[in-house]
Image (cartoon, rainbow, N blue to C red; front, side, top):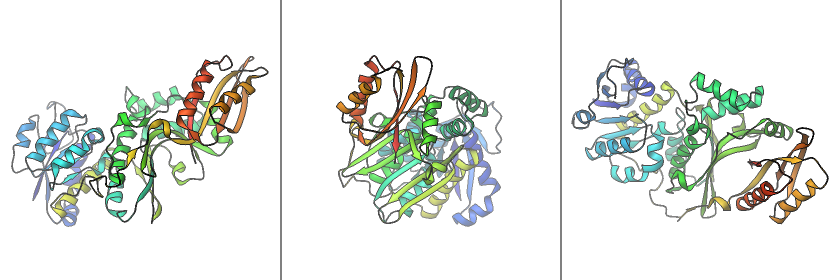
Length: 420
């Protein structure tokens, strides 16, 4: 028998306890041993919870209990769970976590501390999609060339509604909050930070590279507006918040931001609150993973898969999945050296000479225009919507600064990258 303690009995924690109880027979058959949810740790004992397990607010009681085999950490946050997971591992207890923020900052420290003690984390990325298992086990024979993911259901739901139904950003944000998809302070989701934490975990597994959120390019969906959607539709694009990990020589691009992506690509068809991840391996080619990225039962399913894995194997596997060491000496590509295509939305004065001046500024920064549309905004101004050929990130930012300071652009330009 394996005894499990659940730290944080919220939606996911309650689902873990109840699924282990409701599906006890089939889980025991597949694990080869009975798995028993024994106790849950919560902050507020007075709050009603839909579980039958014992509850306590004394975390030390659980950590010091030698009969507890597996700690499931579902409390959220960074430093407090880090302290708890460290203590659990030092006590020789196996750990399963769904805490992406914890792993974004402390995954290497915890992997080193765990050693041969099982430390699993499938539910930390894309909820019910077994993407970590796919990278760690299913694609072991491959060098991973790229990972592109839609890994925040809130942003994907909002963008889907904006594109398909013409709903404006503020309206759909309010609706998302009412539906429980977005928090009262939605910055973590709409600003791209939630997706970035997940990207860093996948980047570690695929490339063995240690990066923190502060090291990579992170942008959100807050500036997307109707003209951008119109331009996307005009040229067979859709708009997604995409996480991108890509190997370029000895460097790794790690970035999260909105993109224009062709409607013909498989990942562009992932809509609503669903998640999707495309992985390209040098031998297998492209594989695609699709499913719910959040929700109590979906996330609990991934947590329990880790528990069963621990029951079967009885020992840890490397946190990085492939090799712990960065043997290729890969480095993170500096943000300003990224090369891609770009879309610009400029509000300009509608008069002679404006287009020539814009073209001159772009040309001086080694940027050439690929497509362009001009649409009236009011009696004196127009929206100029354009896409570029491939250029360097630092050049587009320099050009945007010059355009913003020119007398022909009336407000700050909006830039969205194009993923071809």
